Image: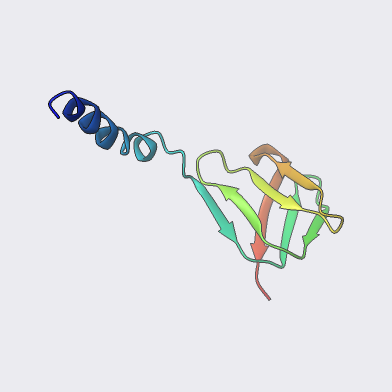
Length: 82
């Protein structure tokens, strides 16, 4: 039992590491959404988008199901909802 205690303590202490490293920084926003690109064109997304709170990147799926990502310097804004 004494040998297991340090391992148990280490396992429980490491659970907080995920929170400290901000591995959970994705915000899911329900669609439909409109993304305005830097050149003024728009992308209409029927489904939801995911926005990284840390890097401000947007990930979405097109009508064929293909995944696309936009970085903060590629878009001006986005809006979602009816």
